[in-house]
Length: 155
Image (cartoon, rainbow, N blue to C red; front, side, top):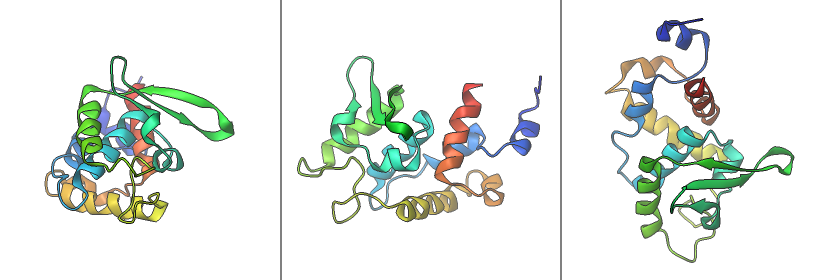
């Protein structure tokens, strides 16, 4: 059994808990609340990029037993629990999101965020988070790395 977290991080493509926390330290410029909620949901649910950008209001259940429902590969539907932190971020974002908007994480024109837009968003937050966690400069952070981060956290 591997006990040294640094060694494990070296072998796998994931973010350390301190690096993940650094992403959430300064989320409030431009679409800050949307970005903060998107990053929290991505890290805490392990959704694929297409699942994340395809989420709609009705997929979020923020009451007792908070969870997000999505249809993944092979049309399989699954529910993933949300932490209190993610629920608070989602409530803050939903209070600002216009009711007429179809997607949960829209772009500036109200449409679905593209994969490139999410990559740019992650790159911007990585640049900002590098101040608090310098090890992020050496990492290539992608939406799939966020998915791996959850998987390794659950082990």
